[in-house]
Image (cartoon, rainbow, N blue to C red):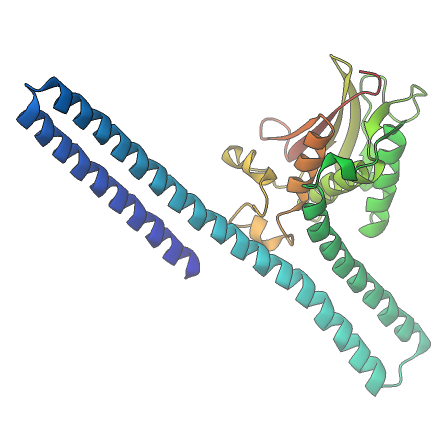
Length: 306
């Protein structure tokens, strides 16, 4: 209902803007017809008319953007509330059960494990919200060093496998350009290791979440011209519509409709990745569709020494 109400508001602003522009055009035509012999009045009228039109157009665009931004904020709040409320309710239920009933040691240990998973989920949500604010801070807050990038990516892959309880075959290196796992050539970058770790973890997390039940994620590090490197993470999941490929990197933005709405998230992960990429002189983009199912996210960085 709230979405329908916002759409009606946007349509109302569009109608109001078009009506105002039409009225301004009619008044300007009337002015021209009445003062076409007076060059000064004619010129001033046309200039005034153009200023009015520009103001109306900008005002309408601003209002519509604000409505959409508020909608994204509301979606973000709803998503974060859900991400916080669900594990809290789960932990409370397990604690009440432990308090009221005598359980077998094995079942008690199972409950402890489930509560730890819920606390990890809570911590992950909080850290993501905090990181979204930190990545917008000044560069002086960062601590760049030169380090080996492939090792960091490998650690992130191990982290993702453990976090999601996946077999090693679900997340694997894809050979390419002599930089696959096992090649001894160092791949060094200059940047903040913790921020880049956050970016890589978010890319892997996103690929796993949207893979569906059968997780099949390929990771590749490729050498590029101009002394740059690219981390490519390809999943074989549901894919992303072409018109959404750029929007998914906006803050709070999430693709609407099924099956995207069924996947948990806050709409901050890829925004954080984009912010970190820009802060390190790189870029990130997504590709989807074609002969290969799923989505490929490419994270580019300057190679150390460039």
